[in-house]
Amino acid sequence: MLHFGPGALAAAFAAGFVSFVSPCVLPLIPGYLSFVSGVGFDELGAQPRRVTRATAFFVLGFGATFVAFGAGAAWFGSVLLENRRTLGTSEHRLPSLADEVIERIRREAARRPS
Image (cartoon, rainbow, N blue to C red; front, side, top):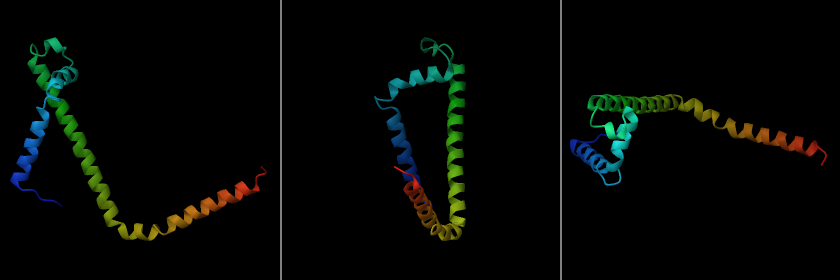
């Protein structure tokens, strides 16, 4: 597992912040907030609580989804790692099984009249 110091984490945060406030992304933020909160674009400033609450729930849900996907991938990787010996022996059977299937398909194709 990789370990990063505080400097690397600060640099990653700074890079994310700079990309967030870039001229390409910054104009999109009001539209995203309007879409996520269900508040019209012209009413964003009039209902700050609703916008803040909806945005917070969106960010929490988005974060939870990616944490769940990451945990699932880590679990799947650990299962593969724990069973690598079993999987290593079965990897030699797979090509021979594929060869057998291909050979049967060829035999069936040769039997059919053209």
